[in-house]
Length: 183
Image (cartoon, rainbow, N blue to C red; front, top):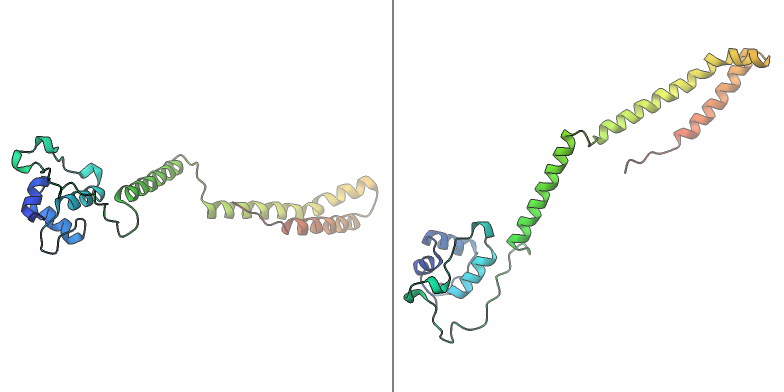
């Protein structure tokens, strides 16, 4: 046998509108006759309420005699398991996951402020730019050095430049086949 919404609110130490809202949102069950079973409702309320927001409910020893639970066998039946939440996770699990995500986000923001995090697109563009500069430097190298090398070994400068350009371009073609991975 259940109690009225107002009686349950008084026992719980909350307003009757809080109890009505809990019934409407499905946080606590209501009997078919509109009353509330305190044992079932307390179990559901405790399992689905943020521990930081729980109202301080006095222990039964602190309640006036009219509010102490009776020792009748009807109230000492098996403990009713808490109602499963619709998402499959308890409030505490969801709250913990939320707090972990907030902490990770804050750590990333701090790392960005310390400039310890690198922007992937920017890093890729910088690597591409540096590789292009190095390639251009190698392509122009044979024209700059061919005359000196040809004089040292005593051959025609144009022949030396042509040979150097052929071998440098072959080497750059090999390097171009390397695919960088940034993970």
